[in-house]
Amino acid sequence: MTNSRRSFLKKSGTGLMAAIAAPAILPAGSLFAASGNQKIKHIVLCIMGGGLRNSETIGMQYGNLMPNIFSTLKQQGTFFKGFTYANGPTGHYNAHTALLTGIYTKEDLNVKKNPDYPTLFEYYKKHSKNKQNAWWVSNILGPYPSLTHSSDWAYGKEFASQFHLPQEKFHLYSNDISNVLHACNIIEKYRPELLVVNMQDADIAHSNFTAYCESIKNADYALNSLWNKIQSTPGMANNTVLISLPEHGRNEKGNSIIDVNGFEGLDHTGDTASRELFCLMLGPDNVIKQNRSIEKQSGESIDVLPTIANLLGFYENIPAVYRKKMGKILDNAFV
Ligand SMILES: [Zn+2]
Image 1 (tube, rainbow, N blue to C red):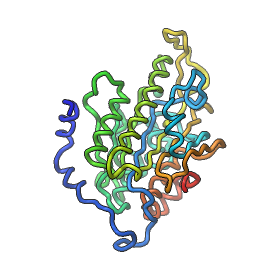
Image 2: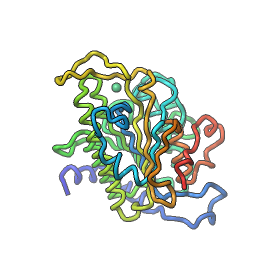
Image 3: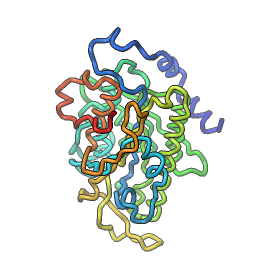
Image 4: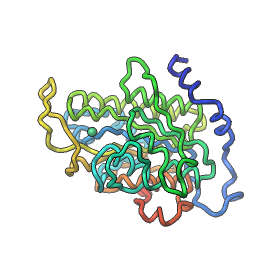
């Protein structure tokens, strides 16, 4: 066991263990009022954050920077090529919030403010059967801890996720890879029913395009490691859906900040390219369609939350007043 892992596990606390050990699979429909069937036991959402432009990912303008995603990973699920972040400012906070609340927000960045609408974690903790085992792993100081819960009176802190900000880096690795390795440790130790992890290194693109391309390769490596970890963890293997997508894109036009190789930096200020995404949904072949690519425009950021809620069987338990504001279930990926 590495030093960083040992101290991380120490920090994670022992009370948590007790809370998490209890949940087990309950006989369907016996103890609970009618609700949707749980299609899968575990969900991992990996936000390939920082802002990735389709040109460098699925467009392969500078070669295939995501060799794992576009070969072996893609075959193990459904790939949405025309995913969008359709509304709201193309800012990191807004786009993270849209993913984690299922509702677009126009709210300006405010690091101390919790979102207005409940987060995925709160819906999960209030409405799912097992309730306890939800994690949010984020590697960047800023607004992200406030995404553990909303300011909605009916939800809020009582239903917040465990938040984990990795304090130390695994040596020799980028921030993103390090963050995903922390998520892998949580998988090994707690087998979370719901885990969300983000990456952020791609945002170096504002000032260094070459480093941004490097970060895309790292994100691909990290995602592959995450999937391998899931598939080699007893209990999670073949019983987990992994959803991964960028939180927003980047502008078509450069910002005239030139890097050492003469490439121009890229911001994200709401043009078409900064709203174009892709989305990967991996899972077992009895739940997720395999080796399927959806070429046409289909799916958007606010669809991720209802899709997860449906897969975990608690979508119907979310009050209609919230469901009406959300996107739709991405059931075109379902078997
Ligand atoms: Zn940025």
